[in-house]
Amino acid sequence: MVFNWFRRKFDNPEPDSSKDSEQTVESAPEQLETPAADEAAPEPVSNEVATDYLAWAKAAYQNIQQQESAAAQAAATVAEEVTDAVAPVLAVEEATTEPLAVAVESEASDIEAPTVIISDTAEATTSDAEDLPIWARDDRQQRLEQLKASAIETAEPEAQTPDIALDDDFLWSAKVLADRGRTPEQVSLDEINWLKKLRQGLDKTRRGFVNQLKALIGQGPLNADAVESIETLLLQADVGIEATDYVIETLQTKLRQEALPPEAAIAYLKQILRDLLDKPFESNYSSEFLPESNQLNIWLLVGVNGVGKTTTIGKLAHMSQSSGYKCLIAAGDTFRAAAVEQVKVWGQRSGIEVIANPGQNTDPAAVVFDAISAARSRETELLLVDTAGRLQNKKNLMDELSKIRRIIDKQASTAQIESLLVLDATLGQNGLRQAQVFAEAAKLSGVILTKLDGTAKGGVALAVVQQLGLPIRFIGAGEGIEDLRPFSSYEFVEALLSG
Ligand SMILES: Nc1nc2c(ncn2[C@@H]2O[C@H](COP(=O)(O)OP(=O)(O)OP(=O)(O)O)[C@@H](O)[C@H]2O)c(=O)[nH]1
Image 1 (cartoon, rainbow, N blue to C red):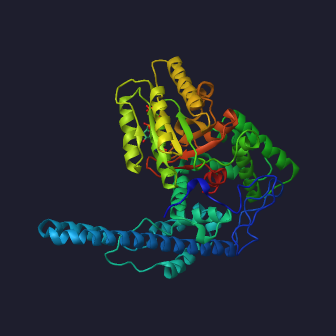
Image 2: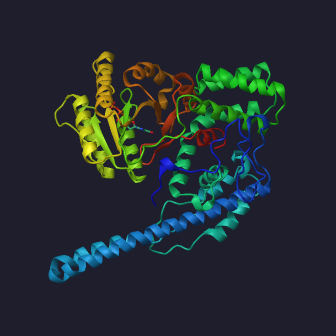
């Protein structure tokens, strides 16, 4: 099923401290999370709440099954049509066509209605209730059993098994979407898969500091020792000095005014983090970030070598194409010959054309010039420009980037231009140092944070926004083509603190 990642719609926008609490699952309006700053409410803990979320997740799960079945059916129908179309030829060339017909048929039968599996991890994770998020505790095991009994569809013996499991990750992802006002009918497998990935990606950061942080904050009003410990934890997770000071001061002010019960204190902390991540939207930047349809958008990706620019171009191209935009890639990293090949491979994966100059060390600005002309003649909506990360010295790199940017501004003055700095989360604070230089050469307008999977430095997202004043537009949490998605402060903070 095609899912437009740039136009995700939520009834509950990302919570904002100036707004009232928002309604969550329709059937349980009293179970509100994401409370307003001044009326932080506890996370839902009662059995009924967990039951409602489970019921919601089950409905979403069944909906996804249906979507996947329908998609498989549609694919099978197409394959059948291909078989039919091939049939007349078969009659003429009997000897050679028989194997072909078999091949087409087997392709069709490969795409049968999906089997749904309930993962064993659901059981495994319930063995230690203390490890579970609050919303998922209590008699969850029992309810999961009931769900299994009612939700599983019997597998066709030879049917293909898709990657759907009603496990702990699914339930957590479903809750995040439910809290934003989604109905079970609006949930796509793509979103569930991404949220799972995000949650898993932030696992190290969560284990490293968030659990200790929660324990400290949950103790009630902060004394000097607790403040010092929280500061240390935040700095260890690479949240940075400025963002750490902001978090501590805001938290302390609140806790001085009123004693918040542990869950309310955590909810308030979430609010502080979201506000910090969304701060750029208060001034120069729109919270919406998407290519404008039916016109040329140019996204220039810059950053030092190895941070993941080329990979990110490939993932962005795939996501944009599958969200319905006409895309083109400019292979502007002419410094590293392999980078051109690498970006071509990514282009091939999604059937997206790559404009490149076959010569080595050619002028990247010339490639960009050609790509803009090609984009115009092909009515491209999104042109993604890869750039080099390493030149002989910093001055060369910056001169080259300035030149590329000048060409874009001149040749495509009516295009929507975005200049995105790609930062590697595993580098933490160190990665931020180059940002200023790039800001001047490329006129940065946003950040893409890569490699959030497998790092304990996920807190760097907060440092990025606080120190650079730029919004994070996308985050990468894996090497796969679907492992990059638009950034949502709500989802990020939930994965960080309640995953
Ligand atoms: N785990 C993980 N690896 C990533 C992610 N994004 C990129 N990578 C990996 O990071 C490595 C470097 O990625 P590239 O895309 O080549 O980096 P680059 O910035 O284009 O590098 P240069 O072309 O040298 O400037 C590759 O092995 C990628 O697979 C991510 O989100 N998670």
